[in-house]
Image 1 (cartoon, protein in one colour):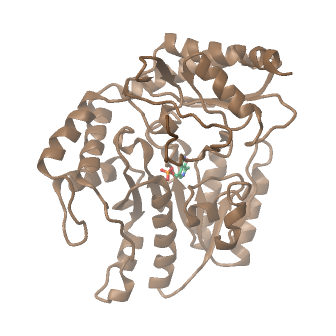
Image 2: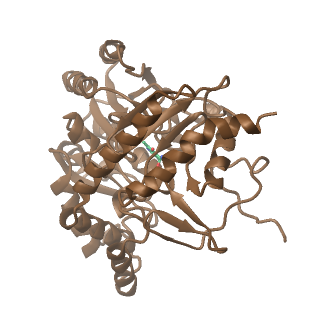
Length: 422
Ligand code: PMP
């Protein structure tokens, strides 16, 4: 067999030469060509919300593909985009009035940053400072990496990244330091925007923090005239228990980034929502004030139709009940691991749980990450630990029995790994 020419994302091919082929997926399960089933306990990188191949979304995609597959979105529009934009404004936090489309979480962040700087330039008071949270993750494009935590992921590209003011992560008991650092940063130099992952930092290690911090950060941002950007690429679409983490935290961002679950996890699509002040600062007869951003597939009609179907599912199906039941089911099962001496810092927010396996070399590159993943796969479970941090972020259709399988595989991981070590 010749080796594949494909270069996979976030994959060290030298350590992981073989990829697992996947033929189909339904609900919480993916299936290999050999017929093996794997339980998708991380929603295929946090995108699948209602389950793989939800019939309503698949139907909408089929229907739209026959009618209009793609059309240029500069100077043109179409029904799926219009319906989606209106639907999003209806459910988004108060004050968000305009929708800009792009294709991924990373591009929704790039758009957010450009909107913020464009706003201040266009109102004739340019600002360039961006403030971000320590341990944050906002994507792998240059802007996303710049505002995200620096480390092994960004080391090779450091010269391309722009400078950002970083404030400490508000770990329990240290919230005031974060708030004070933001106030000081704004007082020190006019700040264009603060960008945060509200309530939980995802790729940074599923680090949960208090809603009051966000309310304070928003108050300070308002006071200094800085924009508040909520990157809800991961937290959006029910993950934290509420539709959006901003709602749960009681904040109303000026700019909101959404992707992943916007299509229920079926097709790539993202949006950046903003206030009318930001839009109006760009609307002009002066062409130099245009928002200079586009991509070929902006608001692809098939992806928009999938997202419209997703909104219908949220409106008409018992999604909130499923999320509430999943939240409780996760709580029970995580509770049973809290006293396990091999784990520490068991934490949960809504449908997401996480805990750290006690190992000497903690961190994202902890060698235990790949061993853990292999162990879970041996048990028929897809979990992809962030180093020694194991987290569970399943689609909302997962059943209690399926969750039992996930947690049984976590509970036995320390012993299995200990048995394997030389
Ligand atoms: N922001 C956050 C908070 C994310 O979690 C991610 C992806 N995990 C991104 C941005 C980037 O999204 P994408 O991978 O779709 O570009």
